[in-house]
Image (cartoon, rainbow, N blue to C red; front, top):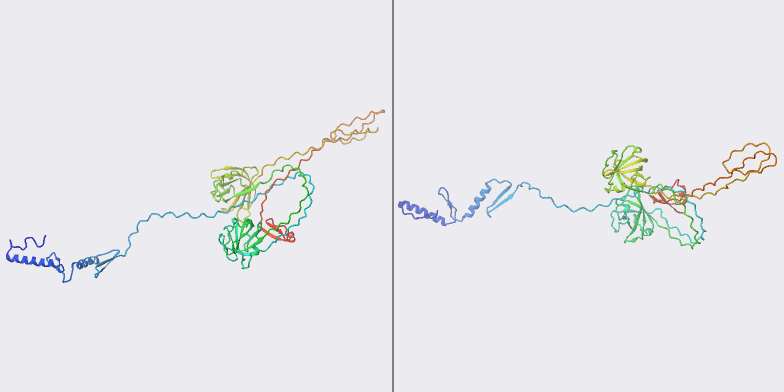
Length: 534
């Protein structure tokens, strides 16, 4: 209601005393209400609530609100009140419930493609047997012998020097006494970067100058030379990289342990075998003799070449899909195997179904299976009758030929084919022999007398001429004249010329020896290339 009340001061309907009292109260209230520093309010019991001089409503309100917070109960939050500044401080002490999981982050970038796997090259198949040589044409007259001097033999170092292997493939200066290749796998390297100083710090500049085009470089581990060994040939002139030499190379051979990647700081012996200088050309010889006649074609070769792919072995004998990259036999006894299941995908997951379908394209093809890792020397050979598409794999009908050792489950093998060569042309027919005389000479008339014993019956020949009629009594019949020779013997068939052959180097070591040392080898190793040094 409005203050003061309507009608104040009151005069009606009250006594003068009561009116005076009411009016005094109202006056007092008005006085207090007009003084903001003294009046706060009136309680529900009619009591006046006042501040002393200097108080204010703001302070009272702050105290009341602070008391409401401090007197209450808080969970996960603490409250403090600064009476001087009139500020409430609220501090969260607890943690709320975990929020829902956020959406998945964006997919990261695709990682770099790994290095390509080693390309395993199958060995060359056996060389076809040579047919008998055809008749040699007449030798032309020999030309005059040239008089050019033989070129001097180039220096052949047999020991080499030591360098440490350094990781990395960059074309950059290696550490003192170190070398590196431009590929992590020794069989794929095309450059060697080698420091001008050897492992001991001595200069090797003069020695490295021997690495000219055509030179051989043998790299051999000091303690594991049976596996960590490589033979390279220099393909063009090396270049100076400033403290090191950049040598372009091509691999001839990598050790039987398979492709290798040596670890840092391993010590290798590096030998450089340069080619000898070419001697001067001698003067021309005489005129070339005529070419001899070409002999007849040779007989069919035994082998045409070897090609293979890497698969893993499964020792299960169930004729079903052996699994990606696997093959299996249909019998645990190798000599009793009559079928082989080979998956369409090889160990590198490449589809080889088209290649597998060609394994029976020629009668006489031989399937050869060999382990890829040294020193396993097992092998398995089968003749191929047919190839059947079995949905996801091929089934080969085979005939066992030869084997050594047993399959190792899960190990890698080179499954290859020795293809039979095409049939050679039929040799020319030899010339007919000369015809003998048609009649033998007439035998003389025998003297009269007793009949001699009958001679042995000869082969049917021409009848001898009738002897002259004697004038006396008839003499005894003379012996049968000798049978003349029949038709001449058929001439020999011309010899078959030699077929072509496929060869390839298969050396795993090159070694310099004297002639005397070579003569003591019994026998020389077929996997070693010997260079005679006298």
